[in-house]
Image (cartoon, rainbow, N blue to C red; front, top):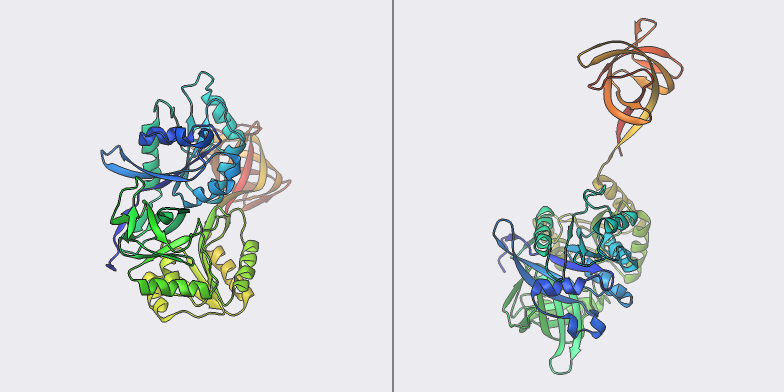
Length: 498
């Protein structure tokens, strides 16, 4: 395969999630113009399906979107979580009649755990009992804050039955995909996730794959854990034979030697020898399936762990659990026993932020060369606490910084001496803490902040000073567009980066 990167914006893979009977399957049915609801047991979708549709965006460009249909019934919790992990974008469907329900929260938690960008679709607005504002309030009460409701979560109001708002939903999906810069390299061998697998009495073992990166060509070989298949029979989501499939697409592959576990990462190879070598390596190292794990933190760094034995990996994973918190942490995309290999780096290359760590292993020669080409971060250790110390340090160095406001002092305004343009001379008493020259102040009136200013001069007993303390009476020159009045409180603040 051509080694020159061919980076494109991928067709987003979208997971439709929400409470049972809130209209997920009806929405997909409208989008793809075919009925799947009547063919399901009791009208409830009980498997994950994948469907590709095309939509003309605001720029009159024809764009593809791949939808996953995840079941809503309580019995299928695990499958819902798998759908959220595989998806690039999630759509949380909420009924305008019922508002937030138990499985709405469960679906929402799965989306948040997987750190997937998401959109809320308020459905059934055509129903007599629909109450959009009440639904927005139930979402806010559940911690789901929409745009215009104190939050930043994009949303649309729709009727999946008659199609109202569906075009706007598709536009929003494409916008979110573009905003998040979802890209893939088509000049790599295909890799992705096993979405579904089953044994057919006539055709043999078949699996549905979601391609997350690269190109899958007819004649290549696919490995998922200990399973292998030549891609002789490739079908798109309609069951039609294809010879190639790309990142952002779903493909059915027929002919696996054993049933590949759902949720497994798959990797394709140009030739059978390399594929068989990988399967043998997995069997020798007891790697049954490499899985995408749930992202536990708002900011999470993808991590690959290779170790001498599986027991070491379990110990390392336990230590990583101690490092992770709600805001920052690691999520493990691949593990295995044995040296760090070329395949590990291929998996790492799907995200430039991925860190590869090894414990009591070495780096293969091919991987060493590829590491420099890809710029992948690799470190090996022979002591676990050294490995975890490194990960702690790396997390601290990479985590997003936040600026916080700290109040250092509180001053009550006693008198106004004069005002020229935006400069005001006032008399104050320091009620609490202290304040220094050039401090920023919040101007508080009747417990509400009405503006800000800056202390440009300080005097005490007609002498210029640089700081005042609790109990001091002083004169201040404040630079502010807000007119200060007696009785106002000035809070001296400093900004700290944490």
